[in-house]
View 1 (tube, rainbow, N blue to C red):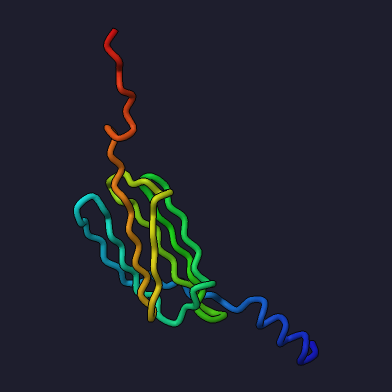
View 2 (view 1 turned 90 degrees about the vertical axis):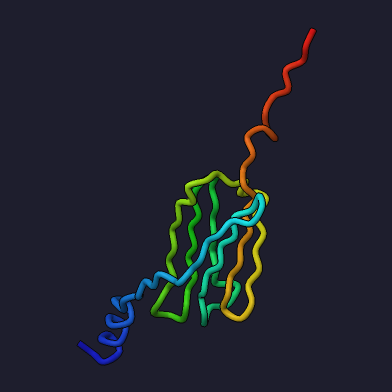
Length: 110
């Protein structure tokens, strides 16, 4: 096996380390606040998805490690109203809690 082939083989089997980032979750009025420490990550490398009761994050840090976080909130949120900021390795997300009566059908009296 040539040196070039061995180098290509080593690069293709290089392991990626999965890191669970440190995070904190708390509520504030009608919001759920999530703060996640992901130092060493560029904003463009962060991928997030939110459902009504679940959140997932993948953030690549260099070529050999990735931050992975999957959270079940235990409360429902409105994912389309989520806001986020990322500054100096700290990601902050604000999720608006789902209020069922705000989406209820008003029954008219005839």
